[in-house]
Amino acid sequence: MTHEREITEPVDLCGPDGRLNPAAVGWSRRPLHRANLRGWGRAKRWEYWGVVTPTHILGLVASSLDYAGVHSVYLLDRRTGVERTTEASAATDIVSGHSSRGSCSTVSNSPSGRRRSTALCS
Image (tube, rainbow, N blue to C red; front, top):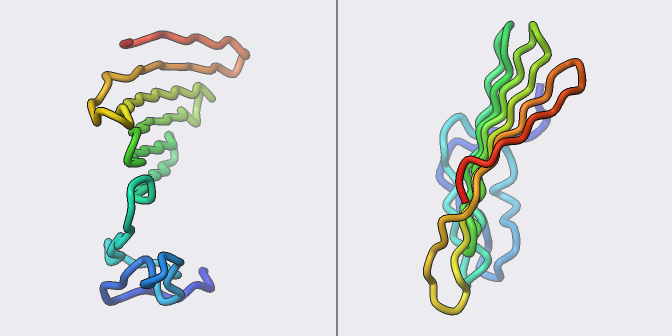
């Protein structure tokens, strides 16, 4: 049970001074926060999803940091203990605003401690 309040109406994330709006602290059953961030480099948006089943744990992350994007997938097979993580990133040149392709990688860990890493793109 959480001790934070449930947010049921749309709310601005920040006050006029750019600081956290106290009314935005809490949890909601659906997206209700307005990311009213001003200025370059301040609009950091993250989306995280976690799914837990009797056999697997799945974590998904998608983010936009104004100048870069970081995305990852995590999967744990609870029966075998094998973990798989895939991450991808892309950056935007601060001066030109052009996007780069970024890089991707996959890492697998097994209960025996063997680690495998594979580059997917460059």
